[in-house]
Image (cartoon, rainbow, N blue to C red; front, top):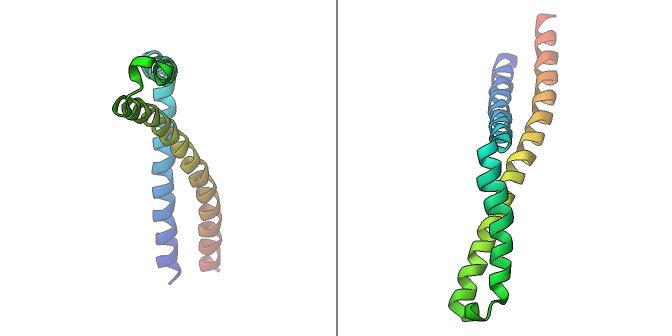
Length: 113
């Protein structure tokens, strides 16, 4: 019984570690000079500003063009939301690892008695 529980906890730890590693990969990517230039500065900043200006451009006042611009603005927001979600999930995973390791160690210690 304890062995099954410990095994399940270890599997949970492994899954949480994968989430943390994914976040580390994202962090490394975000520090990459080309990523910062193309994605952070080019897309998330300059393109967002350009699209906001298009919202007020008289040539873009048709419902179709407005919808297209709004869709592109939403895409930028979704990408930022994805990055925040990865970071949030990693923070939760780190806490879960800490808790699971403590419970696992406690169960193992009890099993040795």
